[in-house]
Length: 362
Length: 241
Ligand SMILES: Nc1ncnc2c1ncn2[C@@H]1O[C@H](COP(=O)(O)OP(=O)(O)O)[C@@H](O)[C@H]1O
Ligand SMILES: [Mg+2]
Image (cartoon, rainbow over all chains, first blue to last red; front, side, top):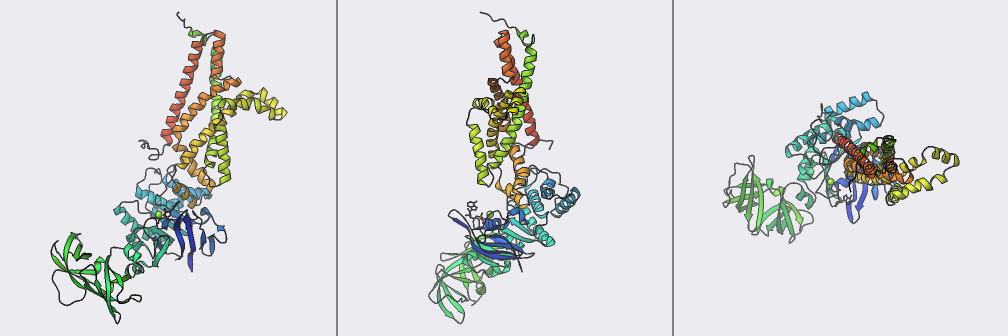
């Protein structure tokens, strides 16, 4: 049974449709991520769930309790939704200490001093802030503020945790560490979490399911591996990782196999799996990720999808190499193991993995 | 022509007593008016930012009404126009208990309250919206959010302009002399009339105002040091924090 259900929700700001008839549901205990470029409506979706914005169409409900409904004119205010939220800017209250920041909500709920102390200490331990209780809110590093914000959101045991780009203000190293800690924390607490990010690596590592958003709509909703291996739209392919787009023309389609010529790459041949709506003679885009291309320094016989290119750039990353290669006017990016060491200006052979090529109509 | 200074006029006869009483009255009327202004300013300044239009409109009316009429007119209004509207026994009580003092205090309080209000409003509006939203999503009601998060932060942000306005309030208390409140300026004029020593009397007044203002300014600086939010108004955290 879905824990949180968003049905056909829209929110506009003047001429801008920030969220456009969006629907999805989140399961209990799930880590659900809204992923997309800046301005695609992720934060607005989260704010609608939190009750910081009112939907103009549609309905939001949690465990069969309607939180907001444009049609039924229902709106439960944020403080009655039992959700914890962490903002990108953390919004730590500067006039309070760490302890007060985390415990204030409990105090106003009338809990006894002893209970508050116990709960706050417990949660500060959990987020790794122990012994910083008395530090003023203004004297915290970015990582510490992030932990305070998280503790403040978790301390009253909310049913749903909403995180709006909580790691994007941290430096790269801390971000990776917090990513792992956050995932471990979410699993330990078992709390249903909606996570917003524009960082696809973050989404991949953290999420049970990812909704890729674009222009206020969901392009694809699936597990991270499904999103990565089986992107359903060209936008998703582009957004998730690097990709080569190769313009081509369909020569023939024979028993599920499709033969193309790459228009910008000296009419080089591509063989790949056919897709339903593509016919002989169509102009298409064949897309393939750099890691699905292998590089050889010598020709290896009669294999298909092998092109002779010249090396434009070669960059050494220690654990792998990144190449840019040229054939005609087509630039191809490819990653390889460091054992392949072609130099700029040399010839090299690239092999496109037929099963990894995706076709889109152009 | 040479003027013979005679500073002894300030402590001979009743002068000393008058000056002392003037200082106490000035401090009394200013303190009470300040408290009234702070209360009115905080409430109306906060109301001007709430997500509920009728309350915002009410607060705006208060501010524009009191801010845009000269203080002197308010003094006359509270002293001459308001008492006759009150029930008889209250009128009698008032005129036996320094009606001019209370009228002056009200005039000063509501006038400066309107000016405080503007500062508090701009203080609140300079707080990032997420501070507010973080409080709501932590389960605080809108009223609690204002009371415990927004207003405390805003007050800390606006200590410097509030300090300045408090000095204006003290200085403006001299306008109450027009409705015969026996405050400091009133008393220096009285000494001048009795002794015909204008220079000595007015110098005394000037020096006392200066001392009071410097005292308040020093106090405000102390308060600012104590409550400043490092990073939010550009003041670096002091070592004792
Ligand atoms: N309060 C607002 N007023 C006007 N436009 C807004 C407001 N909030 C968001 N928008 C617009 O709505 C769109 C989606 O914004 P947002 O949900 O913040 O995107 P994201 O979080 O994905 O970067 C953007 O075009 C943004 O400019
Ligand atoms: Mg955002």
